[in-house]
Length: 189
Image (cartoon, rainbow, N blue to C red):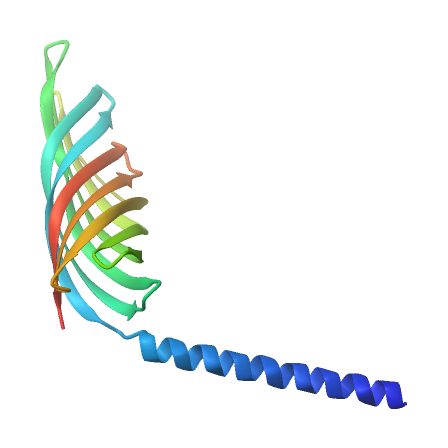
């Protein structure tokens, strides 16, 4: 009986200790982490697409708006909505004209890790509503689909409100787009 009582006291002490440790960690995180800001950004991207008629390259624009809901010394988290022009291509196959025009509206989660006082690396993943308008032999076709996309990049932070970034994105869609781009992001407090 006495051993059982001693084990129950040990369990209670262990639970109280874990709860105290969790409260300490949460209070420290609350003092160093803050919900930071709304941000907007835009960039130019070199887009490579694999079409049924071969590979094509294009320079395309993109823009996004996001909200950073966690900002600590070790991790920053945000949610982001964006528009990416995936490119426009045209040509001839056996003297039959074709054209493709693709774009995506996105929603993504972004995780940033600071590397020193001015640099951060990040990864993003989300979903893209992709629209591909194509024309082959003067027969138009529009394909709409929701697909996943992923990305990774790094940013240089200026004045805590302006970031210059470079990133790689890959869209898994009918034309399998890959993008490498640079741009600028503005934070609002």
